[in-house]
Amino acid sequence: MSEVLKGKSATRVEVADDIDAAYRYVEQQLWGDGHPVIPPTEERVERFVRYAGRDPQDVVAVMEPSRGLATVEKIAICAVMAGCKPEYLPVVMTAVEILGENRAWTYRRMMTSHSISPLMIINGPIRAALEINCGSEGMGVSWQANASIARALRLVAVNIGGMPGLSPANTWGWLVHYSYCIGENQEQSPWEPYHVERGFKEEDSTVTLLWGEPPRHMEMSYPHSTQELLQAMGRHVANPAIRMAVSHSYPVMMFGPDQAKGVADTGFSKQDVKRFFHENARYPYGWCGPSARSGFPEEWQKLYTHAPDVMVPLSTGPDDWHIMVAGGPGPQSLWLAHNALAPFIKKIEL
Image (tube, rainbow, N blue to C red; front, side):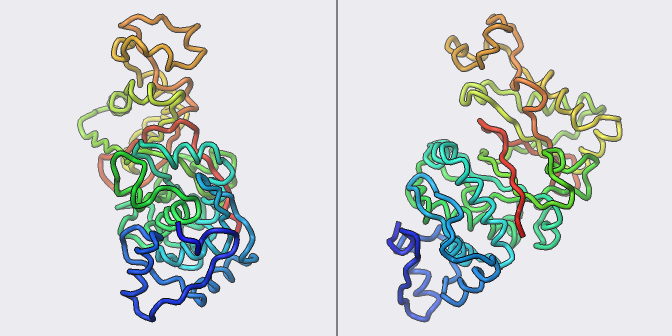
């Protein structure tokens, strides 16, 4: 990490007034991610800081693993380089605050060899205000708001937090390291929005942050009933490797609008869906191997017989499951694995 982003105050450097020269310099300093960047000139950075309405040296978070000070100014620098608009900055800053408020959790995930990345899920009116993609091509890899907001968080993690960048700790790299941001498709959801379920008002705007693997696609076009559909999804998700890799699992099920409406039309509430998954997303204990018992939560030691044919639930209760609606039309949904903690959620202060 360059000295420019160390300490509390960023340092000014002189670079030739040429976009190619600026890009080369950023890559030489290991500030970038291999993609072209917008040069963070003083004028651009000051415009972002003014939009934030805070002192540029205010510390938003202490970032792991290097305990870097994420000031408003330095977050603005990363947001400029990522291609953000100034109005995106409150979303990025809220995600940075979540990382800073959960430093032990952040440290472990920053340095893991596992292929997980921070996923931001946006709820509330800010989705429309910033034109965050919530529908078709919902992850927004080719959509400015989704792509640049996610990229800004990545650049903050590398440049301020000291997360490995060009030589990542992950065994494999994935596109989600570059862009992992989506808005919940509240308008086409038959259920209450995720942030309302978590205790916020519908008019609040929030960021939910979790560390997940690349999403798993579930195209379930053959089931003829809600029970068959949810059973098929549960079989897709039930995997002892998930349970053995983490002490607790919080699967995130991202329903496509069509499948969510079909399920709701048959009388299933979101809580019904969670309960169904808890009761049916199970696998035989015999799949786990002889050392599996040590990976189970303590309460399971009292309740379950460790026999090969015993069906082991993926979750310890219905509320371990997190249900959202996103994406466009079609018989598809997604699930996100390897969540050792429930997703964190925070209100965006505008």
